[in-house]
Length: 462
Image (cartoon, rainbow, N blue to C red; front, side):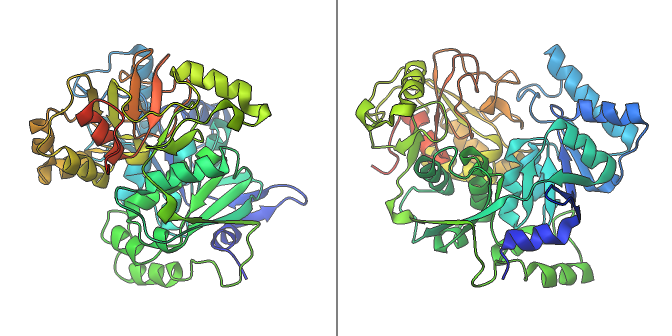
């Protein structure tokens, strides 16, 4: 009896070092401008080529501006990194979706939307949120720069086999509750270290009922509880999403792929190293109050009191609240905010924009809020425009920006100023993550929409 993870892993092991790591074959390799320059330099120094260029895809996303992309990038460091990526793509004969390419976007958005991500694959990228691609029934995980070089040169990587965990989400989601809330609830319950050393399979009725984009959000946040990655068994929802996309198998190859994909599920009776079950009827819209994704609570809840915190965690708890400007026991509902960010590889897809737009339709953006609405790719942006969502947003006082990682991280122009509060649909709320001194409250697109309209933390279903 094998788990889904076991089936994919075992099919990709080339050799195994006794009492050591496995040499794992990699099907797909994604690169962006931040973690790849040193890897390509290493290839040059050793006189090596990219071993299988057709299995590598490059895009610029972290450093790019989300306004004025038709002009040269103003920031020298960012411009140099993006230009270096373009040069490396040309020199090594790799597919590159640069700034003016209609397929450009966040690496974990463009992989799935172009069909580059498929069930049963091993997928890596020099980026921790590569776990996103696991939503398709793939083993997907982030790697370091030296490992990027290893994959470019050999299409293989040395990896220690992780343990397996299954997290079951049973029941039906309540009104206004999304997979972002499921993920924040899970990390709140299990802590940011609760899945360290594990690869997680998500299962249960609530997971089966999620759309592909919602599944991607759930898998995206696996890394925030310490997991090596997360994956979901492929099903009709998966196949319908992939079919006819550019890199998807066609004709007889599709039939062959389907025959294989249909075997990709954990066997009945398969044993996991750890198993956890959550009743999703207990989950409400979630927000964070601290400086890691595990410091979460229901939007109508209260920050824990000091006596509720374990002795070993009190110093970091106090430090976090001081940074955020909050008090133990405080409620955040009604708290005035300054910025709203809709976007990132966590929530920058078309469904996220539909949810946000549906809430703000017929309403107006609060005067005290600066809102950055950033599609995850040009394909998402074009779909927003095709559906007329951009017009609704404009009427409500919002402006649509150009694709990029944007305010998820302080590597581009979209930085939250020091001391300002941002309700963000991204994945991390670390100190300085969105800009030096920025204060981040993680939330779903629906909660972000309510905050943008009301100018404060607002329960969208109250």
